[in-house]
Amino acid sequence: MNILMTGMSAVLCIAMLGAALLAIRVKGDDSLPLSILAAGLVSLFASVLFLILAAPDVAMTEAAIGSGLTTFLFFFLLARIRGTAQTVDKNDGSALDGRDYD
Amino acid sequence: MIKRFITLLLLAGIGAIFASLLFTYVPDSELNRTADYYAGHTASDIGAANIVTAIIVTYRGLDTLGEVTVLFLASSIVGLVLSLGQKQHKTQRNRVAVGELLTTGSRFLAPLIMLLGVYVFVNGHLTPGGGFQGGAIIASGMLLLLLADPLRHFSHTLIATLESFSGLSYVALGVLGLFMAGGFLDNRILPTGTLGELISAGAIPLIYSLIGLKVGAEFSSMLASLSETEDLK
Amino acid sequence: MIYMAMATGFLLILIGFYGALTNRNLLRMIVAFTLANTGVNIVIVAIGYMHGRTAPILDAAVTASAAAARIIDPVPQALVLTAIVIGLGVTALMLAYAYKLYERKGTLDIAQYTDLKW
Picture 1 (cartoon, rainbow over the protein chains, first blue to last red):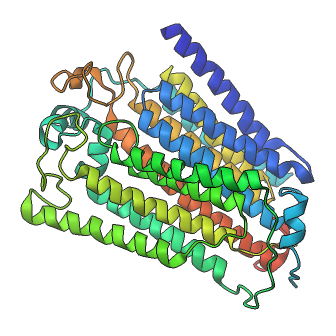
Picture 2: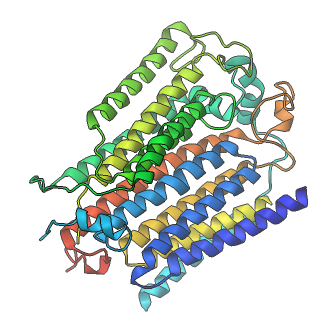
Picture 3: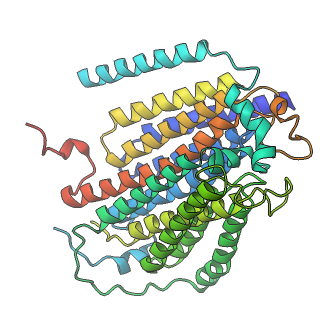
């Protein structure tokens, strides 16, 4: 049991570090969604790690807030900034456009 | 180049501090005195099975009030910043044809998600979870509605009313504790009951439900003000 | 296991700082800050963990009288719970400012913000 838990947390830690490096190192114009998703993945792994560290309250908060709402806030903003073309369905984009900013 | 060097130097310094913290850290084998007090007295004084909830709502209740206030400030500043300079002339926003499946599905799921949120914060004193988690789950239900219909407008009046009602009742319950029990936000204004039952732990379920409503309203107002911004190109 | 979690937390803080200092895209800097935030939370929860003990919730297995010898430290957990919620508030605030800056300048690259340079 204990060895299983230790092994699981080792895998989680390595996966978290990998996802974090991916989130800040990935390059290119279209890489922002990937970066945001990788940060959300770090939060999700962190919530499992909190559960292993006997903190179920924190795990629940992290899963609901850290990996759920934060990721969606980022995507909301990204959709606004990108003019919806790349992140939202084409159909929505054409209806929501029609505004010129100077 | 020099910038990169300075950055790496700074990170190496912080890393050295972290390494010395990590290698000299010795885990405690006993609870420290504060934690020992909380562990020993929660059941008899507060009557809540979840000690973290007892700390958040009663022992450190004033901090939680401050935290909810910070969250309120954050959500109002988000609303203020995003509405500043918003161009007023409303263009005709076309109705997007959302699929029937998506609409029906979100209508079916959103009340269930909100019910789960309510369950989480009503049971905060017994099981893991509580006002903050429940509030976040309620806001996720709102998010589902927003995603299914991007042009939906939430009533800001309703959100603001809910938010101020729960905030005021929260403070009022705290002041009631000042007169009827040991101090501000004392939960013993109601009988503590038996440990482990739904109606127990004095005012904790009531206070945590109010916190849950307040947090849910604040997160929903953040989401709503972000979704009401215009596309930039 | 404590040391492993703690080391991961510290490394996440360092990765977050590195990302915030070297990236020029405002959104990516905010992502890096949320990473550092997660790292701090992991470190604080790891400090509260004690080997062979269980979560601070009383039930039939962990009775009130035996609680002090069976549960882990609940105080860091309460702190981190607060920190996560405030973290979302701070992130939302940063995102709102980023949106406003993009609206004004039309770019998220901080190298293009030259107002205060001379």
